[in-house]
Image 1 (tube, rainbow, N blue to C red):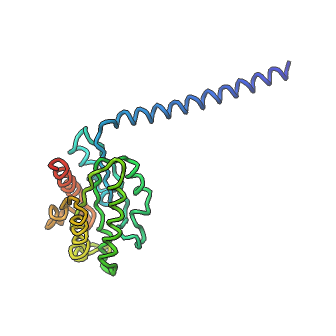
Image 2: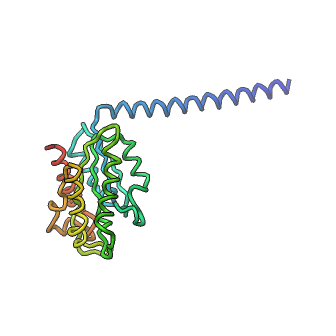
Image 3: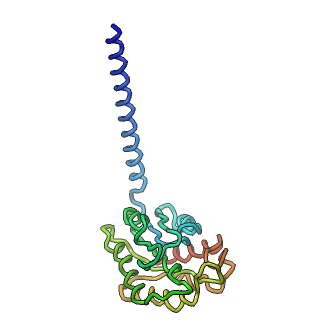
Length: 225
């Protein structure tokens, strides 16, 4: 009798484990299904960039401005660059692939600030080649997204080894050249924030007002396209 009772307890325990596991799997499936259903019909906007994208709050502002027909995804990586030879190339980060898996209808690329170092010796050709590679990775997605290239905000006095001279004389002209060559539109966030040092906390990272200025510029470009 003792053996039968023990066997029953074991069977009961196994059945309970199986039931709980099944419920967990079903719950995850329903959660995924509901999420997909909620996203159905929304215009996905993938925001690709560095710390200005990741932590300034501009993507949240952009979501509010664009409205309920859009879903904005933040795929910023602090410290990341266009150049593949740097310490932290954006294309080598998980967010690069995550932005593609977001199935975007629109991709907003705002990179180049961290490439504008005071000791930059990289050639213009190298930046342009790497920039084209990054853009093509998104432009050739099955979702066939519209790709917008952003001219990054100006750089003011800072302790981050970044210079506005490099940004204005090297990085932004490269972005303009690639945009022209590929027939892609640009968003001039740089012009919208030039002469506004109060838009920045440390000369590079936008304040809340700066983040709103970025969001306004991108929203206007998307809405009037």
